[in-house]
Amino acid sequence: MTMKLIPYFVMAGNANEAIEFYQEALGGKLEYKQTFGEMPENPEFPLPEEAKSLVSHATVKFGETDVMFSDSFPGQPHQSGNQVTLCISIDSKEKAEHIFNALKEGGQVSMPLQETFFSPAYAIVVDKFGITFQIYTEKAMSGS
Image (tube, rainbow, N blue to C red; front, side, top):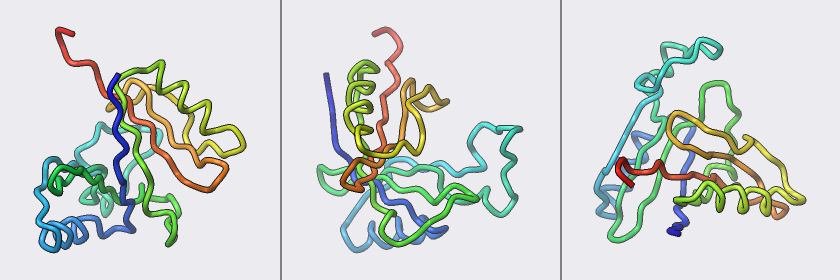
């Protein structure tokens, strides 16, 4: 089993600016970036035109450390204090379920553990101490 804890910065519509700032200030290298407009469309949640250029997910490497970024999903509240989360990146759905169940005890589930287009098991949970965790299960590589 492989597991990493990755800082995840959730921005209020200025993720592109933050990515550029931190790359310059800390010598980071953009590894991946996707906008909300590049995601598969969901007819149940139409995306406002002005949100299509916002960052849905990005990864910047600083030395040996990855930091992930996104803008708040359109319509989701954003306030200072909740913009930094820890993303637990793991390669096992079973371990993701175990971690999710442990963290939700006395906490609050923001998004139940479920399959998404980008992960076979993804969830967001605020633990009993008020720390927000994203649980991200990596997709199995083909041929494994």
